[in-house]
Length: 66
Image 1 (cartoon, one colour):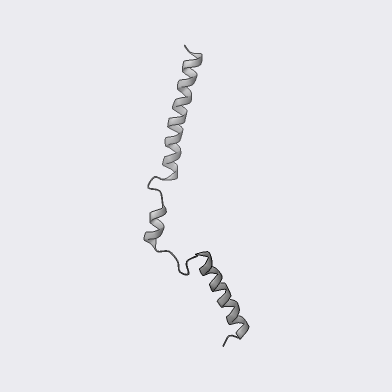
Image 2 (tube, rainbow, N blue to C red; image 1 turned 30 degrees about the vertical axis):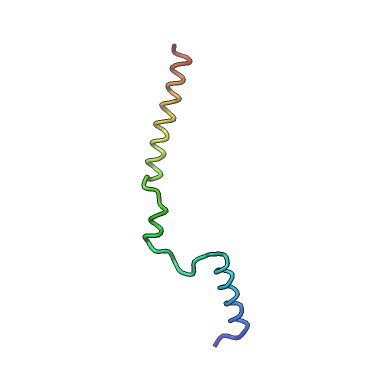
């Protein structure tokens, strides 16, 4: 049986977590999936490269290759 000191320490830790708003149980798979982006990081990087790279090439063409 835990001592009074151990019980008090565990109760204080639980109360601190409850005050901080941290969940006492793990999130479900559905809750974790809601926060994920539907577009992967790799696809986002490729899209950014195409858009930004195309813009830079057009600016170089306009400025230097009139």
